[in-house]
Image (tube, rainbow, N blue to C red):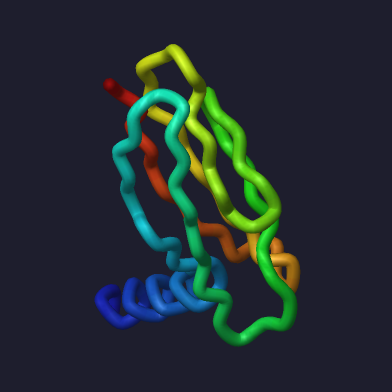
Length: 95
């Protein structure tokens, strides 16, 4: 019985919030750029992008690393059709 409850919970979580990003992880040199894409399934609209850490990302998912810093940054995409659906990716900035 417990296994069935766990499987239902896992399926509910996957259905409610998965937003695959590509690439899931990237390595860039300072000042370089990497383009991210999100696969929005089952909802209308696109995604909004944000960065937690150094660097910037534009509305199209183009991340620009800071010019003179070594860091790890997290890229976050949120579905505009379902704000519960998010995707995460990591960017390592190093020479």
